[in-house]
Length: 318
Image (tube, rainbow, N blue to C red; front, side):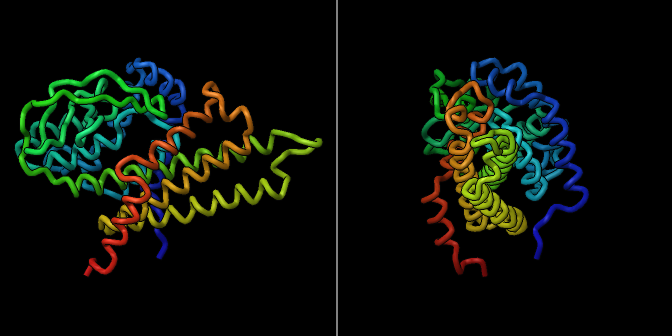
């Protein structure tokens, strides 16, 4: 079986790629890292107009979803262009707000890009300072947080972590946490695959230009082997990702998240080594993808947690 997007899905990916390539996303990321959200919000609106957030929102609430395959296609492109903002968190929020009351209230503006959501589960929320809908998973259920605390810097400067204010309106006492976690991991896996593909493309381009001993370093056998290993890892992650979109079984999605994030992280290490000292500089755009690959690896369940979920799901599909 070949897990490949069809012609319509490829056209969707191509349109997103063209839009994001023209948006100069590295500049948007740097603005976002400084707390200037204007360019990021403008890009968010364009992504919503392309239908991305509607892919997880049911038709009854002005979305077109749930459509996990198309969501994965979209998030590969969002990762490839290192788009900032609580992208995965907005997907998770849409899955959490499943009951008719909260869904009717929150999902239509979320699908339209009029609101930006984030979620905290006992710790910090991503981009709580920018989000307009802040959800907190509390012991008594899902609450709408009234505000966010100061920003805490993280490894990825574009992923701004904030504590959410306690209390707030109780939206539902029994939110579908496992369902939301599955959707969040799927979006994270797709985003990580896109990050890894971008890192590989950038590194291949670099080793063709950088020379040592009068020849491009890309002609060295050791460099070719490292890039081939990275390419192989990413290509093995792709069918796991799209296979998981067909089943949406939590163990399958956890496996896709594990493989995609590990492949992206390994590709980041290869990219850093082959770029040399320039790869360590924050001013060089490569750093945006390097830090994103490492951050996504731990987001919504690190490697050990995903492995445990995969093992716990073996033999339980039938």
